Image 1: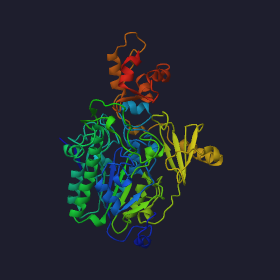
Image 2: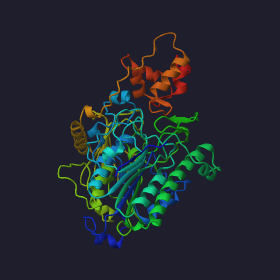
Image 3: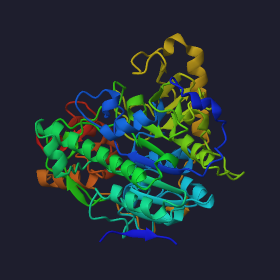
Image 4: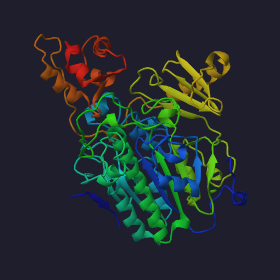
Length: 534
């Protein structure tokens, strides 16, 4: 049974110059933010994908503006979504990676859920007269976590979610998010409403519908599965757009589409179907994750643009120019809260100090330059070639990627080097010095421990300590260890997962490398369990 929670610019349109930075005098606009999962910048046909077809997203781009320099603030799910919710960098809440089981969260210095006392976009809009809802993925906690606050604690009137806390947020399937959204639109069309629609596509496990699989049956199995998943996500967008039109609220609704990070890596070999214990579904694994970055460097878990630059389409009839492409405004996830509150005519509390900017003028089609620098932190996988940066900062068109001690850096001028292919650090030592200092000073402002109020009462389990030094280590022992340590269930062991599983033992990095025969920074089950594990 599903758990539900209920409580009572380059191309400028001529009209753009008529608008000021303040909200229009008309009725408050409805707001729908559609947030996809692992959907790459290049996974849209309007972004030039060679075979994928996304007619509904293409329609959104055709009827609105395509912001081509939009960044999320972390290259994985939970922290990226934290930034959207709060308008703050997620590291301010010690949310550094995805929410996992409490033991792993604590190993990472993370809380077990987003602080419900944090300022949130739905709460501000609700206080401003909006009816608020969240449908789809949650992942601001973990399904194995007891005591996690429910969506109502963050300002939602209604919700139906997966990847929620233990005992709630367990739907029967992943394809009902659009249906829930359509029902909410029909029930609340006479009120201003805000809906976060966080769809599953294209995260693993891939669970394509039979109809979409049939559509792409002429492709090989790998392309068929991924294409079907993208089609399912695009169809969900279409259902929402059609509902807005049918209910007569299309012209007074802001619709936004984006993704929480860049595309997932693609496994070298096919593997058995993947089980996601959080979403409680079974489907295809990462072999089928062939998402495209559109030529950007890096993928999910990387601070290079392929990991953090994602699609951002905005349709607001009569306000946001139709058919426009904005490739000049550096728009980010933390800008959504102040920008949408301004569009809604909702004044932010004086005590709210966000990390974002009100970029409403950009939605109106005006040339808008961001004034604040942008910061990123990443504490997960740090392998070569694109996952080693731990910090990044962007100021204007300059972007610096660096290690935590700033001893290794790369500098790129994004206006001339969108793909971050040319490191110009040696040519601009003054810029490197300034941006490195900015990144380290920003890092120093972040908390070093999570808020104790956001820790689950669950006892922290003892770390697994298999007798790896024993001569009696068998493939079965290794297989069991692999299953326990692969906490995100992606079919690989990272160095962090390996070290967490063998906490307290010596020479772990060297031992990890002895298994990692191809040097790609992650272990397949075959590498760890097979002959390489002797």
